[in-house]
Image (cartoon, rainbow, N blue to C red):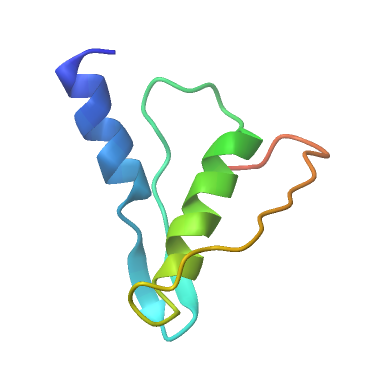
Length: 72
């Protein structure tokens, strides 16, 4: 992974908070038109971690990848 790719990954995971429990994320420039489940899972994990007290570790994460997401 190049330094540019890593920087873009960090930008994709740096979500914008639009409300107390609502976040908006970005889509990587190199990905195809659909969003992959791993990206959505990571973004959901980041969003959830920003809604709880500091230092509270996750206890479980469960996801189902049914279909590719639409980045729009």
